[in-house]
Length: 266
Image (tube, rainbow, N blue to C red; front, side):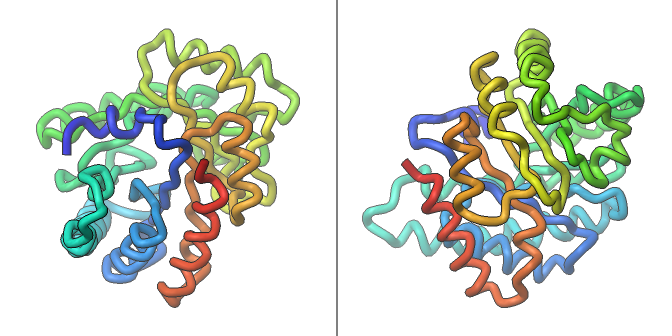
């Protein structure tokens, strides 16, 4: 695989889906099975992380298990005469809460600034701690502006975020412009894990109109209709996390994800 950021930035095939797997909530084997179900459903990226209750050993074991499972998916896809090389590209990307949740086996890492945090730790502190490890391990950093919107959930609480309210479109636009000026490659609007309400569509549109970066949206997206509303507002990537953990039977998970992904395809 070439540059992961280049792959994530390609928008010609329309909006894409990724799952977020939290190593603290499942064994590496369960995580690998869920990743395979997502890949078969059409997901184009696997994010690993999201919890403050995990450690480097657990994260690493989960990523290794997922990558080994995806190799089987890659092999099976390669046997299809109608497949393309891009069908085989499913990067496994770290989505860490901090510098203690890293792995050298990841294809890339979301190197984020929680832009609306009131705590310097999440603005620059954790990044300074993690940068030497990322550089030494040779993991591709994905510079990302990260913004937490209402309701925010645990992510907002832990990150001490000054949450974006549904009507604050000008504020979101200003953050998107700032992220682009700072050189970030992606912009993530997050409603919080398990949020009852997703990111407001007007906020997504405001970010889309304000910048040329890929827009990532997650939190509170549990069905195809909600995902479709986000992509129609301008989202390039849809992230689902808690939805993945709702199904112990991988066949059922694959069916649900297939339906969701079909709703966002052009």
